Length: 324
Length: 246
Image (tube, rainbow over all chains, first blue to last red):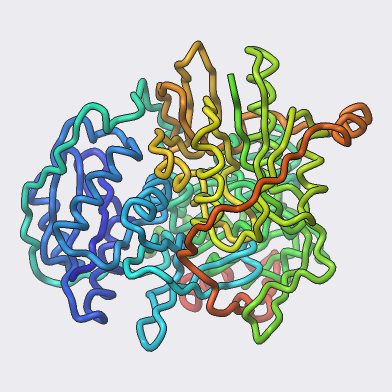
């Protein structure tokens, strides 16, 4: 018996989301009285994988196969399923990343294991095993139970703190015996959206909407994002008219995010927008309209003109970072 | 080319969400059901675009009882050629995927489209499960798709960018913004939809993997703390000292 964690890597390093998933899996393993084992694929040094010991992982299975440097849901499923068999895993933990969520449902079928995606806190193991997640685009919370013996959980970004203990995990080479026929897609190229912080995993997010009046006014939003080391986001209205790229759209039909801080500038806060951001830990709303519905969903609010407030706030942030 | 589009119902985006039976059931009373937005706007319309360019047929498939038929008719009004309703209440992602796989396995579809995720359970699961059940390649979060013979070039979203890949039919793809432009059904489409074939098939016996044990309302936020626009330093202080997020 064990808890198996699939850890994602990027350019030879473990992703932050991988350490969050590892911390979650190790904590869960502790509660279940078993070991946390991780599985990683592709090119990455064993010394980097060994640091998963800090998150409480005792062993890492590593399949270093150059073909796995790009994601292929079918091939990855075979590797993780083989690792689950080898480790005798009864619970699998993945990050709620795009790839994690592509993999989890395939593994569910392969291993006959129920899956709950986007878990927001540690599974409850007292009595009935339940996993909590946001449903109805954040307008409700559901606690799921499993009819299967094996269980799969994907963990939302920023929902579980990274454990920083001592220790080093044993790293073991591993092969699932992949054949060419296990691969279904051929990656031609990858294009980065820019040097900024990717929105899905960002801890701090600065977002703006129609209140900014035009795409030429985003300079002050980007400046605030730079000061805070935050990602930028936008409302649907703004991405629909191409003021901002589609991948920045948060809301019911765009991305759902759960950063520690979400600053919304000139966004009225329609229910569909709130759906994408309501699980943010702290929400700040800056809007000229005191009746904007977003104020009801915010922790802090400034009623004022964005063009006056944001530059002042940027100055205040500069001062703050100069002293901290 | 044969295209299959998985279409699900979802509560209208402005629905107030409440629960009944001791918080174990979603209260469907007065809920207005719509077609799940990403199924309609991106998956269905992309299939229609391919059909218009390359020929073929677009079929929609839905797991649901008779009350879901208005949603299915909308898909026909937008332009699907025919529709299949698998006659069962949809109870969990695995059950839905297994029922669709059971229907689709002998139909020879070239591409199976789904939306990104439904806006009720936000599971992001049916497309992946379906691809594993049918042993097909699966591309999630497609934003662009070109088909040339049996080779498709698909662009999908990845964290912080986009990946372009090649895949041979048959495959499963989930669609999101960018994939197509939403269409509004016109009067001719709505009239035509009334007589287009909607086949009801009996549900196979399949398993259920997960159930909702109980629902909760989301955590309430306290009252908003308003800060004067002339005192933005106070906001910075609160973010640092009180919220501890910077």
